[in-house]
Amino acid sequence: MIFSHYAYFSRLLDALLPPSEWRTLEREAWVWMRERFVPYPLQQNLHRLPAEDVSACVDGLIDVDRLRATFPKPKHFADWLQQSFGKGLCDVFMTPYNKKVWAYDPDKMNVEWMGERVALLDTKRVIDNVVHRRDELGWGPNSTFRFPLHGGTGAIWKALFNALPADKFRFGDAGRVTAVDVAAKVLTLADGSQLAYEHLISTMPMDCLARISHNVLNFTREQLHAAAAQFRYSSSHIIGFGLEGQPPPSLQSKCWLYFPEHDSPFYRATVFSNYSPYVVPKPGQQWSLMLEVSESPCKPVNVATLLAEAEQGARNSKLISDKDVIVSRFHKRLEYGYPTPFLGRDALLSPLHAAFERGSILSRGRFGSWKYEVSNQDHSLMLGVEAVDRALLGCEEITQNHPSVVNAKRDNQGRTPIIQGSPLDKLQQQQHNRTG
Image (cartoon, rainbow, N blue to C red; front, side, top):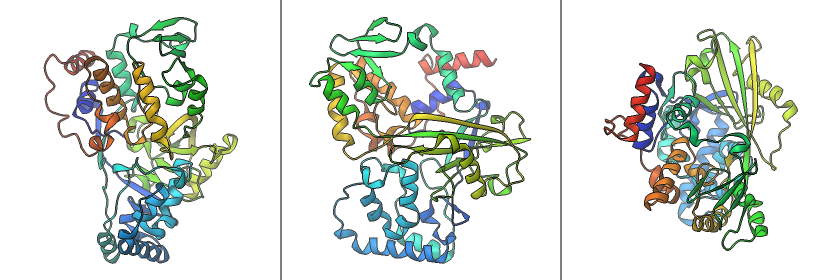
């Protein structure tokens, strides 16, 4: 799923893949719980739930409205959830779902990260939807999104790689950094060679950078290792099922679904073949599901049994039936999945970023910045673009330093003409030459 806060990012996508290679889709997101599908966001569609859940959720919302002026500043994410949605909605959905997706209890997370990522409530509107049994769809920044017709999201970044000079890349041991001498501005690589730099932009996880760095101003090696040990993150298990035929009618227009309950190990499922018919080997004859499972020290996962548990969970939640024929199974574990916005994150991050920046190192990207609030694809790319602009031109990094400013905007200019002779224009010309 791809959407953009930046005209630059949208224009880059336009330059990398021609219009014929893009699909624009309407987001259709759902929640599976209580043996039924409920449109997302759940809080806007409570009438779909059993009566006892509706009553608990509405009672909690009324209490929130009545007591809002008396609430203290939330100490953590769990407080924020209770003060925003009330006890009923938290018990029914918010708390179990957030535990499942983050793999940490909400009271171990901070309150700075949310921004646009959580739908706030208009209680009157929620109750009105309940009374009139009215669905409300399409909330959020990505009510429509685009996706490559061929090659999945990887097609974008392969096209970008192909547009760049190949001799600037090093892979394997020739490119793996094992040590950083910050004072000397020298990298040591896994093959033993060394590489001097003037400015360094690092996208490795900040905790990893801290562990392999030395001669960092104001930090001893022991202090860097102690800081690295305090970072919290979750790992991600990506599970795929390829199936014969077509998805059942209940899934044929859905994009993804959320799962707060314990009858499945995954917190989210994507009907991936709905994004493009070409993500399966036999378009029109097969379909596919992608499932995501979180893992952390607080939420361990049995890797040996996870694939079977996910398959049973897919049956429990009516994603597949006993009649469906699964022709392929896929499982990959990503050590670094989500950069957890843990309590004390910013106090830990700020001095580390400052110390590395004094040594001409900008730690950026999903885990380099360690700011989940700016960790989508568009954010991550622009963190790199803005880091280069800062290193070479002294420009301020808006995405790194002001996430709320970035997330308050949407790109409305991505399809305007690209400036002739600009780098994006050259990329687009290269793409045109390759495709004829």
